[in-house]
Image 1: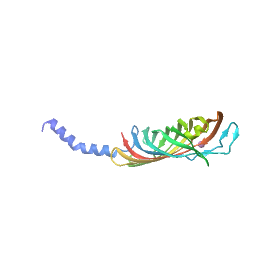
Image 2 (image 1 turned 45 degrees about the vertical axis):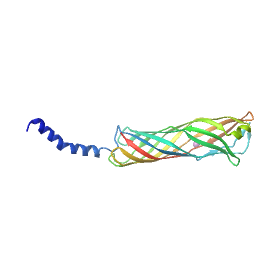
Image 3 (image 1 turned 135 degrees about the vertical axis):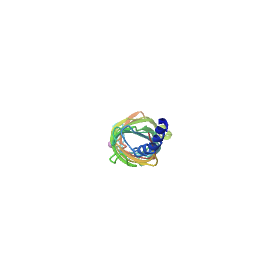
Image 4 (image 1 turned 180 degrees about the vertical axis):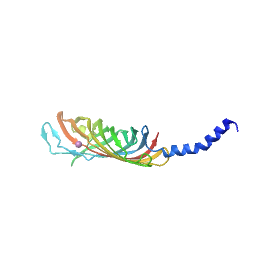
Length: 222
Ligand code: NI
């Protein structure tokens, strides 16, 4: 046989072995990037101070409800076991309630979170649990009192943005070479001060929102 055909036959014989090798090495390793999309829920575990109106302690506290949005997370593997993780989402919207009175205002926020992640299992494992720790930045915007509260003299609502610690745990389950199922949970330390006016009088309340964030979704490994 001509040498070129011999080479082609050799390649044909070797190709399945190369393919098998690329499959078995398809699990997590340095340089991999994973993108995950899914439903993300923010469930505040709020702890409110008392509402202060013009220096007078009203004894009233506030509550924050939960919300679900589209979450997107990414991991870039620095080594076979350590990655950098990012959490992003479409803006979350929450009601702020005056406890015992009723709904006070609506707010929106974006809570981008960066973590250093540790994947303890062998890089060939099709199941990859991980834990992470890092920093959450929460930006509040579109803070607005409800119409009735505006008429009652509430105005100028503004929530301080927050920097805080974030902890995370998650699991990637490989469905196919590139496709995976993901479930993950974060705890974020989000503390803010809400400043506003009542009848023109400066008022405020400290709120630790400190939510659990849950996400379930599909991922793609590049
Ligand atoms: Ni806190």
